[in-house]
Length: 152
Image (cartoon, rainbow, N blue to C red; front, side, top):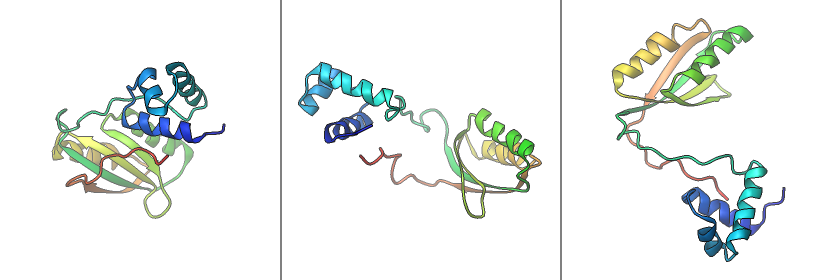
C-alpha cells in the first residue's frame, strides 16, 4: 500500500491523540471529515494502524517497580520453549517480550507492585522453569523518555 505525505501526517496526529474525530483530522489535514475518515479506514484495513489503546500510569495503578529481565535459555527444545513462552503470555506483570541475538535469548519488560513481587516472578516463576539457565534483571530507576510514537 502506498502511504503518502497526508497519510504520514495523519499517522503522526493519531499517535499523539488516537481520539481525534474525523472532523478534527480533517481540519489538521485540510480534508473533509469524510475524506479523513476514509483515509483512516484505509490505513486500518491495511494493518498500518493496528489498534488504539489508552496509556495508563503504572505508578497510579500501584505498580512501583519497572524492570527489564534478560533470560538465557538452557535448552531450545521445542516443547520446553513452548511452555516458557506460555508463561510470557499469561503473566500480567510481563508487559512486553522480545527474542534477541547475543547472550540473552529473551528480554522481558515487567511491572510489579514492589521488589518482593519482582523477586517472586524471578525466583518462583522464571528461574525454576526447566528451559531457563540464567536470569538477569535491571530495575528502572527513572524513565527519561516515555514510549514514543514511531517515526513517520
